Image 1: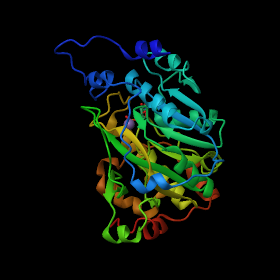
Image 2: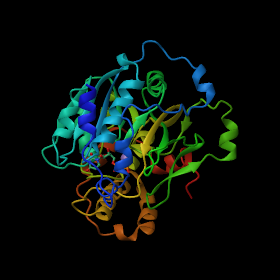
Image 3: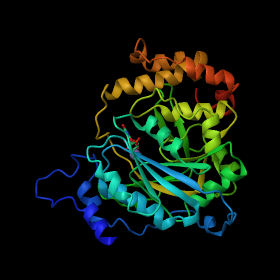
Length: 359
Ligand code: UDP
Ligand code: MN
């Protein structure tokens, strides 16, 4: 097995002058230098270590989609999961290879325990790829991860515990930062939640003094208006009941708004669980091609979200993003129908009750 790890990881010798950022927009050379098995500092609040979880938590199918991921980061993602998750909680790890150049990236990894590989026969984007993984999943709970993560100690039980208590809850870990230059693993603040502006641009927001004061216990979940989108756990029947994802969305972006509005407005809630920590490599740009262009794709996906979910408040979106006016966004009848069938609340309700801070 260790031979396989070495073979899978070492792609080539680095020559002076070669650009280690060229393929993946992070420092590939540094990632290759670091063990796929490395030890991480436990970044949780010390009170987290005193918590206990049910011995009979449900198991989960972990879905990881990727398009041309570096082998070193993809392997480290999977090994961190295998190393730091109680084995009975992982039903399977489903890799969805979104038409990467080298089909072996995915296939070779099926030598690892629990790992399955599905390969798209054309580029679908992360939204349709995740739905494909979710449809294939056999466990009752779905866990989505990006292909360049490292899970930290005890990351999964607190997430599954919350789903077990309330299956309408959709939960995210605190997302620690894996530095894209050095691959140092850095603790993120656990006083953050997801927010956005009217252009539907995601941002992390510091909890207000009042919100902090209301949280006497640092291990308590944090309600969040929106999730970052890449890393979360959801009950599979709840995911299906709520209409999975909007599969007319392409490549990347906007789907976190759509699923967040939908979850809140249709009877669920979103939480960040501070005692669960997962690192993610945050980059400054996408290394891959958007066939329709980056901006056009983001506009199409967010415009679909605004049209289906934001009611009259979509006008604020168009004011903040004038370029979206007149851009085509496809057919939304199916999603409008879904909103009616699920009897979802209005966007005004969402603003009043979930995100009154958005002015
Ligand atoms: N991804 C994919 N197909 C695509 C674009 C992205 O499967 O067409 C995957 C990508 O490999 C990653 C995840 O979707 O695992 C999220 O993409 P990325 O990390 O680029 O987004 P970010 O984390 O920067 O928002
Ligand atoms: Mn990512």
